[in-house]
Amino acid sequence: MVTIAGGEPALGVAGERSERVQWAAVHDCRPDLIVVAPCGYDVSDSARLGGLILDRLPDVPVWAVDANASFARPGPRLVDGVEALAALTHDVAVPDLSWKPLRLR
Image (cartoon, rainbow, N blue to C red; front, top):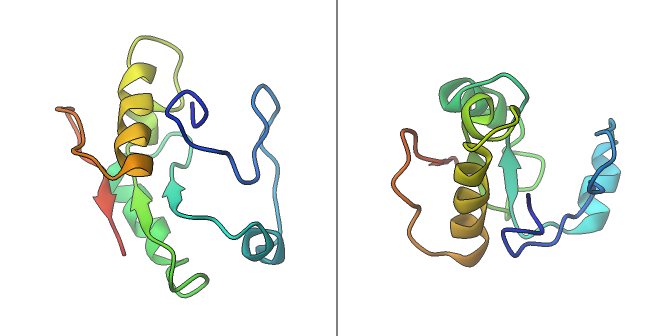
């Protein structure tokens, strides 16, 4: 989804299972932004979890999204997730969604 949105995945590999990484690996990849999208969580729960990482990379924008609606389930709403990622990675207006990404920093 990140690649389709015009971004470059920093740690994940398309088609592979996600895996746990250490904070050192996150620091080393020097992300331009962080999108908090835990499987099964809506935007408010993602924001709550995202708040726990704000001190880890203080200069990196952090966004919470509705992973449950547009990132974790197969179907047409994945397009909403790609459009939201495209807006976040290219600093343009987010499309009209039933939910809005929430900037935590």
